[in-house]
Image (cartoon, rainbow, N blue to C red; front, side, top):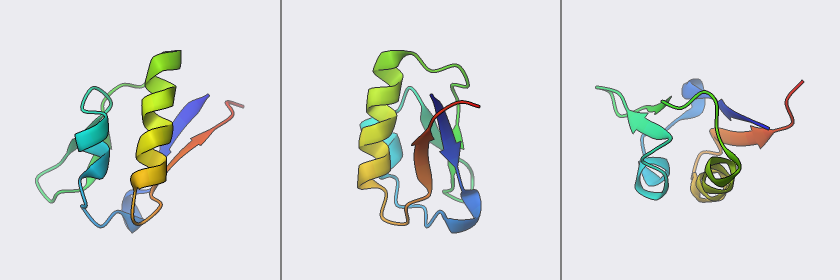
Amino acid sequence: MKIVIRRETCISGGQCVSVAPELFEQDENGQVVLIKLDPSDADIQKAKEAEFLCPSRSISVEESS
């Protein structure tokens, strides 16, 4: 599984950072930044929670190709 960020749609809500600070940060403009590129199974569960909470749907968890 991989975590995909769409920065062009991010509205800087910060829910991702609140729920998974080990995976996400916000840059100087408040946009999401993925900080862990090799997520564990537990990280994927947190990322799925962030995906659900993201108001702009800028985070997705997808099958690795």
